[in-house]
Length: 234
Image 1 (tube, rainbow, N blue to C red):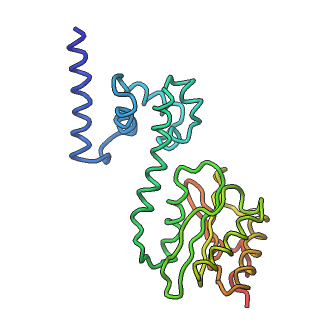
Image 2 (image 1 turned 45 degrees about the horizontal axis):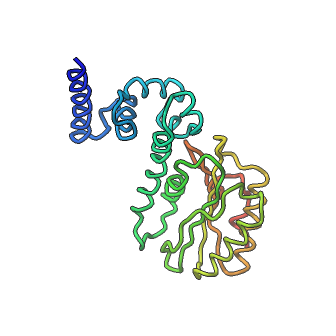
Image 3 (image 1 turned 90 degrees about the vertical axis):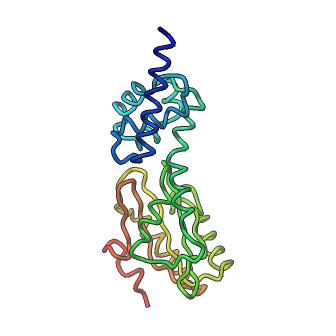
């Protein structure tokens, strides 16, 4: 009897894997995708019920991956390794997206918000990202320059200027995330944008835009009315 159950369990996993190979996750229900992902963290147990329980609590796969590790272990019986494996999913997704940017990527303002948004996948605390461009519009730098609020410390401004000079940049774009979910800029965001704009202009670098990123959306301060005339100063 135990052998039969084991064969049935193994057969179910194989069927899901074949389904993925043939179709990707396009025809999977969220619980099936999560169940299959958990195969590799929990190799000897049925992960179907666990996937349902996790989604009942956190609603989406993103919510599951963003859940605190201690909570996943305590409330759902995951091992530390299995909980870490779940936390790796958004981080690996971000690394995958970043790796597809070629070294000669020409900065396109129409898609830049999406590029920044991908940079913040899996980040549950505030961070500041910077893109630098050369005289021909090619991206020469793209990375997180600070973890924490953009206006909580002078460090991001000093580092942004230092990086711009080091890379001989001509243009700069910045972004920071609002984990709270609101894409509306604070008065501090606007003030810091003005300081960064004028500081960079003093060293011959043009700050083109500042994006505020949330899980669902982003706002371009240049294209919105929030920043006033900051980006159009003489």
